[in-house]
Length: 529
Image (cartoon, rainbow, N blue to C red; front, side, top):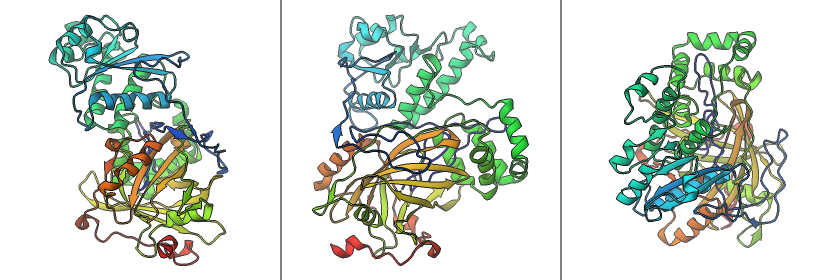
C-alpha cells in the first residue's frame, strides 16, 4: 500500500494523508525527500500540475556517490559528516558499518552537498584522520575501543559530537555546540532554562535526536542527521521549521474562520489538533498516527481550507528527483506496454477480492500498518484507472478501525510508470509510481513511489512489497527479491513487515465502488497464466 502524511513523508496502503503539525493554532511541515536508488532513468523534475509524465531516459547506472573515503567526486560547498563505527552486529541485523554506509549514501542522494565518511574503530586510534577532524558533525556509533574513544575525546573539533550505543565515557562527552546534555555544567543548566540560548536549543535538539535514534528505522536515522545539519551547519529545507506568522493567522481568520471554529468546537477534531501539537515539528510518524486515529470530516475541512485552498502556511514541495528506478521492461516474454502494466496492477482482483496484499513497506510512518489490501481497477473513461488502498489502524485511543483512500491513476510516459493523485484528509498528493519487478506467476512484486503534497510542504519516496495472499517469497526467490530491492536502493532490513494474521484481518471492508467501474475485474493475467 502506500501512505502519506503531512509532517514528514507519507502513503498508507499508500494513502496519502495530511499530517498537519499544529503549534499555537497551526504549524505544519513535512519531511521525506529521502531518495534511495542506484539504478534510475531520468528523474521527474517535480510535481506535474497536469500530471504530465517525466521524460525517462534509457536505462543507465546512476553514479554511486562517494561514501567511505571515496573522494573521486568533490562536493560544492560541502557539509562534511564523519561516522565512526564498528563491524559488530547492529540492532538492524547487518554490521553497523554496513548500516551506516547505507544511511550515509542516502544522505548523499538526498543532497549531493553532504559528503560523508564512514570510519571503523581501527581507522581511528591515536587521533582523528584529517578529513574527519574537519567534519561539521561527528557521529560515533557502537564505539567501545579504548584507543578510538581516547582519540575522539581529545578531539576539539567538530563542535557537534553525538555518540550512540558507545562506551559511557564517550556518551558522557556528547556535545551540541556549547551544550553537553549528559554532563552539563551549572552554567549550562541555567542557560538551558533561558529561551533563545544555545544551551536551550542544544537540550531540545538532543531530546529530539535521541527519540529518533530510539525508533531504530532508517528513515528516522536519515532525518536525525538532516536535523543536526539544519540546526548546526546550514539550512535543510526538508526539515526546516515552518514559522506560524501573523500573515498565516490573518489568512486563516480571513478565509477559514468557519472550518477553524467548527474543528475547535468538536471534541474529536480538537483532540486531533492537540495531539498534533504534541508531536513536534516534522515528526511524521507521530503526526500520521494522529491523523489516521482522529480523521473526520471536520478535520478534513480544516486542512482543506487552510492548506489546500489558501496555503496559509506558505508551503511548497516537489517530488524528489531521486530515487527513480527503471520500471520493469518486459513480462512473460513480451515488451512492457501500458495495458500490460495496468493488468499487472490489477493482479489477482477477480480471482480474489483484492489485487495485491502488502507484505512489507519502506516507510515507518505510512507503510507500517496491518492488513493492507490494494485494489486496482479500470474506470469507465478511456484509459482511466483507480487505486483503493484499505488498511487497519490501531488508534491512539485503543480502537481498531479500517481506513480507505481513493486514488486516480494515469499512465506515465513510459510503460510501467504511473501518476497517482488523491485528496487525502483535505490535502492533494501527487505521486509517481513504477512497477520495479513482478514475478511472471504474480506470486510477488515490488512497486516504488515518490511524491509530494505541495500544500503541506511534503515530499517523500518509498516502496511496497506485495504478493497474492501476503506471503513472503520462498527462500529460493531471495536472490531475485534482493535484486529488485537493489534496483530501488533499498535494503531488506529497512522494510517493515505487515501483520497479515487471519484473526486481525477478518471482516476487511473490501469492495469496489460500482460508480467507478465499467465491468467487473477478471484478473486477466491470472486467467492467462
